[in-house]
Image (cartoon, rainbow, N blue to C red; front, side, top):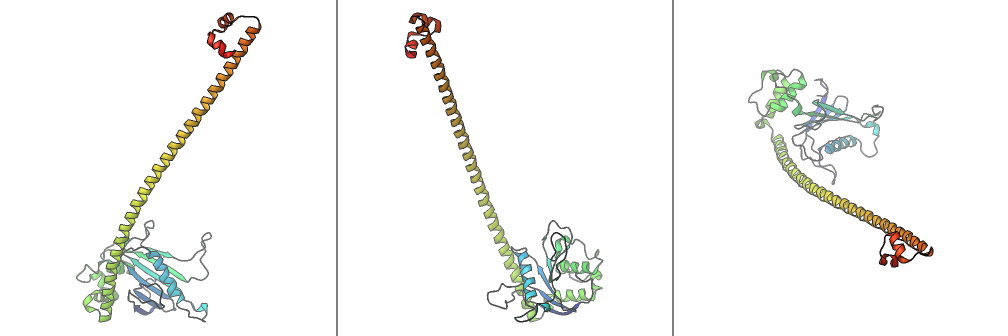
Length: 292
């Protein structure tokens, strides 16, 4: 997956998935294989079956821990070698990325220029995106992915894969009966760990669903509150409009009454009697008394 089949490995260690941290208080790491290359660089290989919460952060944590653990107190940072983390997942991590393999390194975000020191490289291989069968596989890396996907369901090694000695040996190692006691213990621990992760993942999904339901109900209540608030504001606006209209109508009535009073006074001053004034203005005796 990384070097096209070239022989780059000088040392390989199978790691217990329940690896005890070096210092008390540090998070557990779940590395499956740790590889030392000819040039001194490290490759960490992990296979992940269940997509558990925080898995992406865990990959970064393991890479950073392997990178920093190369130097002890008092040593030169120049001794740090590159760390490559190869993560093979049995689930899709990047749904918007169509390729099976993806590689992440440090780049300047605008110029897309790589950081001067390539300290860490994260490589992901998503098995669900690989759809070829062992009959269709051509390249070496494709044959290895066929092994990873089909080893558990095949009773014998297909000829197309058996022609590669390492894959044939891997099929033999994959048989539980051929494992050493130490390897069997690691295998069992990993199986229990996977089951635990599935339970935790299910619990997480249930809690997530419950949270989403509560969140939805909260949003509904919030929307109802906003609607009631809007209705209240509309009623308040309508009340203010009615109050303004009432005040305008009162002002108009007062203006008309003042005009009628001035007219009645002017007619009286001209010498007219009340009967004549009522006839001209078209009002009653009571109306005239109110005006005057």
